[in-house]
Length: 271
View (spheres, helix red, strand yellow):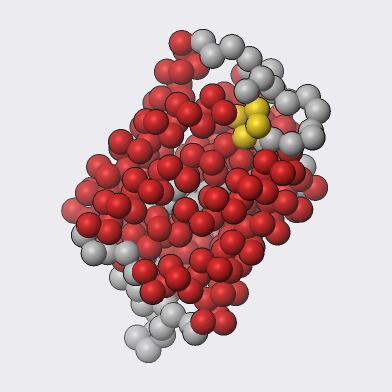
């Protein structure tokens, strides 16, 4: 699969958009990346089922780089709750490996697309309704956060996102301020991405019929171009996140999720 100039341009634009979203919403950019990479791969002759899986895996790989750039910007503002990161991360790694090494390779791409759409729609609705948590509710203890991390890592591995669509609503439900939740979600994107990418490479290493430039389920040309562009945009997104009012940030977050969920549901149902 040659790397023609038009492909580089498409991937660069995608990297700019996802990098900004990573900083703005703490979602790693995967929610935008998966649908568009599915389209790009499909237009280049990759079968639909494989295109969805490669889009998910490649999206997750770019989050390794995007999350580093995004979290640095948030950390400078003192917004990252590192105490939460330390308690969620072990469960995230375990859940990610279970999802990416086992379940991901067994499910069909169309089923993954439908799962992506339904779960993201649920998360968007919770955020859009802006239900106020009980004032006394706090983050659960160590065991509870270990379990929550496992769910975040597992589901993230199935949909190729940095976990922000679960972790941000979860943290705000536990009375963590929205800006702290977004910043902390950006930090959680790194262990989610590293663990899942390890699984994707192992699961797809011996797979036949992969396009040129594939390493396991990961499409290296897209990884290189998107990561190079997104790391420059993530700090700008983080700056915008801290400039927006809480209510508007939540509505932006939910609106983005609805749009992407609608596309992936259509893709899954027509796949």
